Length: 59
Image (cartoon, rainbow, N blue to C red; front, side, top):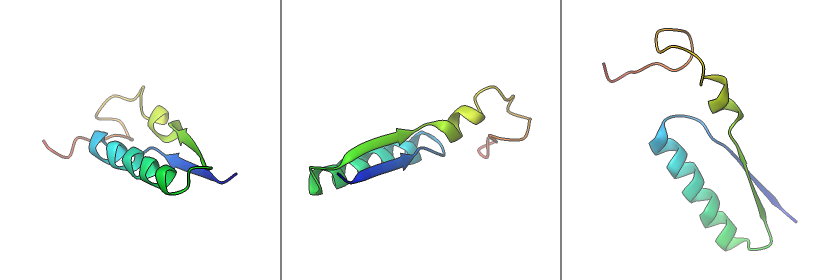
């Protein structure tokens, strides 16, 4: 069985694209397994916006 590993990263739009692409691959390779990894996102969850990690580039 092939594994499709999706390392979620970036903002919501990037995450939605990564998830949608994994679903597309799943349809093309039905016997595959999708693994979604939220580790990178969880690293930045406790940081304040001015700390190193997530930065608001829209300001």
